[in-house]
Length: 322
Image 1 (tube, rainbow, N blue to C red):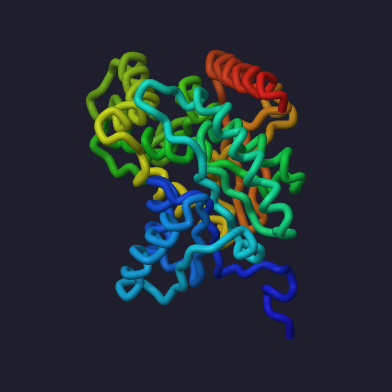
Image 2 (cartoon, rainbow, N blue to C red):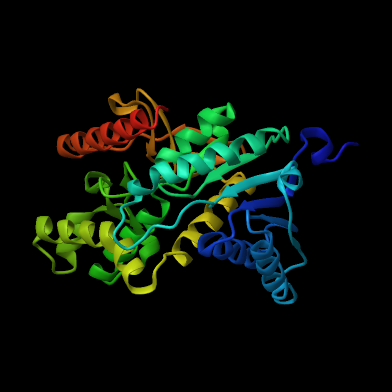
């Protein structure tokens, strides 16, 4: 009997992380703690940095589950089930995520060919910002079937939304069902039309908890979510713990073939009248990556905002000739 690796060329117990900055290291740490993978290879242009992070994280293995964590090169990711790409220039306090586009597209133009040279058969999970632009770039540069290339998208933004709503209503955030959609960035949209608290429409639940200024409160919460990354960067120079937990969750969904619905970034082909751009919409995610997008109710205003978000991202892609 052939094992899974012999059949597919994929080791389902192995993950690779490209980029060992704040985000990459935090992702590696969160994934080590999860115990999902028995092998993790860290790759960085600064080999010493990768080796240092691998050593440091490895010293926590006795408190988790057995795992081999080491610094490597692109040849070492050939059989990884998932390759997480966090490499890229850091977002500075006065920069938007889209300001990073030119720097990071150039970095991806060097990274992606090195992955494809390995005859890689696993999933590419893009985390670097601007994530929607770079998900599109990675899909086109790799030539992989597009279900295999997905971005972390608005998974973190959606978690922030659930947190803020839960704080506002004094309820468990896991009971909040709502999505941030569109760009992971300034044009993101809080899709309030379908938001609910364990099946109860959000406005009804707000009134149950004594809140009646729905428009004011939802606008304030959406702004808090959109601006939270800027606030964190201003206070501590980078955001990394929240996205690390988001990456851990996405990897878990893929590895366990959960068919969970997550607002990951993937290329649109006519959904909501949007095509040829990657942005975040709820999708069923499993072992093969993105299985299918899940339609959610949107108001006319939300749909118009989503189309504007997509148009802005398409304009950026046109500028970088993608």
